[in-house]
Amino acid sequence: MKVAFQMDPVGDVNIDADSSFRLAEEAQARGHELFFYTPDHLAYQEGHITARGHDMTVRRKQGDHAVLGPEREVDLGKFDVVWLRQDPPFDMHYITSTHLLDRLAPDTLVVNDPFWVRNYPEKLLVLDFPALTPPTTVARDLSTIKAFKAKHGDIILKPLYGNGGAGVFRLDENDRNLTSLHELFIGFSREPLIVQKFLPAVAKGDKRVILVDGEPVGAINRIPAAGETRSNMHVGGRPEKVGLTERDLEICAAIGPLLREKGQIFVGIDVIGDYLTEINVTSPTGIQELERFDGVNIAGKIWEVIEARRA
Image (cartoon, rainbow, N blue to C red):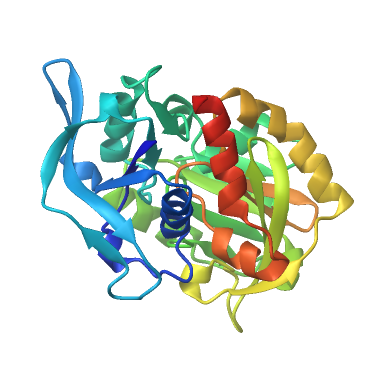
């Protein structure tokens, strides 16, 4: 198949951790042709969705891991698969790219389905499953957020469309910074904030469960660094091997059919203790860590689903 990757600059990725690199490596091993472009080179031109980028081959040699051909412009409608893999922030630039990629259906398969990526960003899709999540409020209004804190005491405050642990604050019962943080956030953004009850179980890890076509295929546990509330690996979280509990499987059974129905082939959910906190559909990570811990070809499982759909 002809496969295009819409992603951040490929030369900057860590080949031992990046899930997009692993997906490209597996595609190449299966005989598929690779093309790479960044989202700023995606365009609509007189009825065609085009991209300027490079034919690509990959190899496990950090710093020389992507060999790119000369820049050329392609019609993405002539590709079999396009991967939507740039990282958030989930801003209007991101949203516009999903509108353009929507126009490739049904001839080209975009993974994950961009219509539902746009309508199911990670911190909003969980609102469909209140029985699975900790107490949560989404608001911009300070009085609403204050009322939530008064009720629950110890809370987590974070940007609704952030990623990688950036801008995440824990405010315990004795904290006096809520008003100042609210002023800070609304000073540079018009977006709401999301507030959740703090879960002490995060000290034992924030579990990333990977689902392929709605089915759980494994998990890694991310342990916060000393003195940190956040467990994201971007900010020093340590990945550890972990199994799936009955509660993890219960959560996956509840959300899996919806993910499958909406074309979300590669999804990473976050579970703290017994609670679902995020459903990551934009550019989930964790493939390589899980493959090393469990000895399973997760990228291969993802490609098997894609190849079956194209067939």
